[in-house]
Length: 382
Image 1: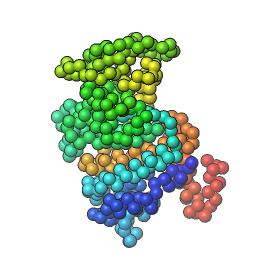
Image 2: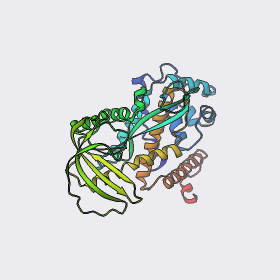
Image 3: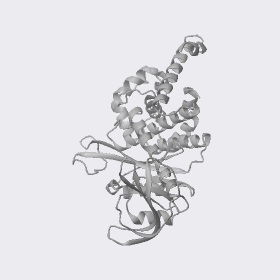
Image 4: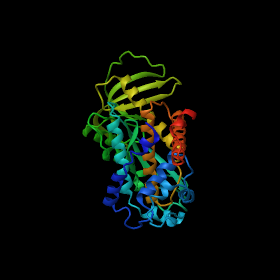
């Protein structure tokens, strides 16, 4: 699958319909929603510097972008950074959210998976509150404001995203639980998350709602053993299972919460203890530890987003503008992951190098074609 096929998954006709639905261009008809979408997605995939001033200069030299500006006079198909900043402040976020959800849906249709893991984690973007006009204080310096969001990963792509909006969501017990409850979790899904959720009542609620989960809990978490399970034979050089017990947890007030959960106590090869908690009673203890290992894939994705797609970069000091920017970067990420999947590429670093090579070839072909040459000769030389 080449670059043009990947980019064509952003259906211009569908985008137009969504624009009409959300009235994206009602306030400012020159800087269109389509322009904002394409400039962020293309810049991220091309690994071009992202700032309002950089986009201002880029638009002057990229006809494919300037053509998405709504101006009949060609000489007026330019923007200035301050106008773009104001546009990001008021543009309808739902428009970009719907496009992101549409791209994610296309991925799942094109690459159906039997993998049942639905992985949740939060990530934080930090900037001085002197610049950021709203956000959360998460216990850092007084003048530090954070933007926090919880992302879920399913079938290798960011499947849902939830932005935290209240100070109470500085606690993962609140933010993560809300994200899991609001996401579409199928009955057969196994929800994986780290030890941010600690409330025994939350685990009980998940169990009552028949949400299957595997997580970590703090070592020495207070609990009452109801019974012990036999540990089946297994081989794992990284982990030794010490105990597999059915338990009730105690809450912070010392009250026993009547919900039978599974506590698997292990020791890592370096000697550290690690405890896993689950409400699945039909798996072996080893299977529970193996399931939790899949949670690492969301950490790898976050690292890729921040290192290669400028995910930790602030394009706007307004929350609305940052939400638009982040939705566009997640769209870019899904497009790249589709390219990676279609071309059977492993990892992220080599796949990104191959992607950039193909992207440059595509640009050269367009230039050769425009000049009346044979673009097929590019494949023979590059």
